Structure formats: C-alpha cells, structure tokens
View 1 (tube, rainbow, N blue to C red):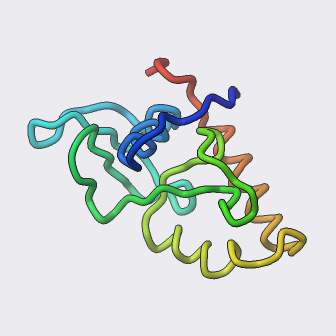
View 2 (cartoon, rainbow, N blue to C red):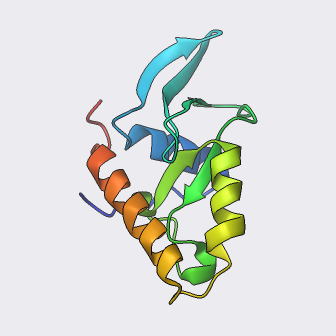
Length: 124
C-alpha cells in the first residue's frame, strides 16, 4: 500500500480520493452524476459519494488516526464512514490519550481494514 497524499482542497476531493482508493467502492452513474458506491469502513453499511456537488448526509470522512493524535490527510489514513460510526468513534476514542489501549486497538484494526481494502489510484 502506498501513502500518496490526498489532493488539497475541499473535503469533496478527499471524499472522492478515499472512494477511489477503497476496493469496496465502484464507479457508477446515479441521477446523471458520476458517483462511487461502497461500504462504511466500520459497519459495511452502503455509502454513496458523488464526484461533484454536495454529498448526501450519509457519508463522512474518517481520519483513522485522528488529527488530534497527529493523523494526516494521507490517503491511507482516510476512510469513508456513515455518520453514526464516525461520530461514535470520535466520541469514544478520538478524544482519549494516544496511550489509551482501547483507542490504539480501534485505530490498529481500522488501519488494517483500510490496508486490506486499499486499491491504487486509477486501478478501478
């Protein structure tokens, strides 16, 4: 798995870049718009990311290693999640100290899952 940086700019670009590098996402056309359909990094619930324009409120950008703990916008640290899962992780784990065992376990599990789902950009 590589560690290319996500494109700079709006979170729209980060959402699309995360979808493009996640093997559970497939490109399709919905309502006349290019989109990606795949699964939540946490619970595998279905998610849709549109290439342009506003996203549905059912998809959020997950920083696996939280920014508060030094996580970055590197694509291998980003995943897509449903709001319930992402906000739940944030409330339960992201605010804890880096040395918290349960938070470290959750982060390690999500990084491993992201690595298994990794697809090189352009390898659709």
